[in-house]
Length: 84
Image 1 (cartoon, rainbow, N blue to C red):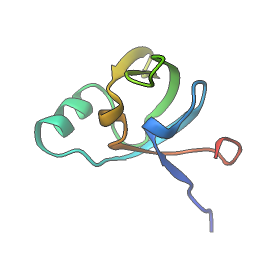
Image 2 (cartoon, one colour; image 1 turned 60 degrees about the vertical axis):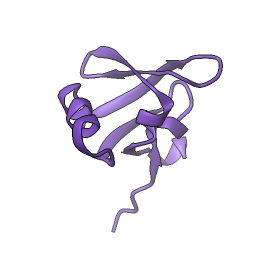
Image 3 (tube, helix red, strand yellow; image 1 turned 45 degrees about the vertical axis):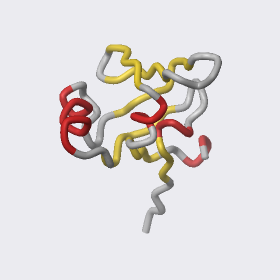
Image 4 (cartoon, rainbow, N blue to C red; image 1 turned 90 degrees about the vertical axis):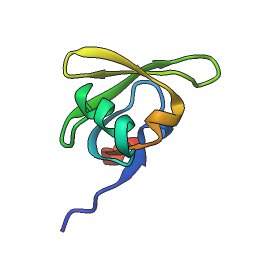
């Protein structure tokens, strides 16, 4: 049986990749994230972050998206073994 290693999107360093597992946000925040393409089984990579770590820029479905660190903390991703 395969072990799944997960992290919050906000915990990934620049250049790391992952696959969205779930969105823990509720209400309008959850709906907004889903509308922006943060849906389960979607590949996402961290392209950059501001000097203080907020916001975080990610690449998803061929475009770049900026998320506040607080928002990125509500996105749970599966990470490859080498990026844990």
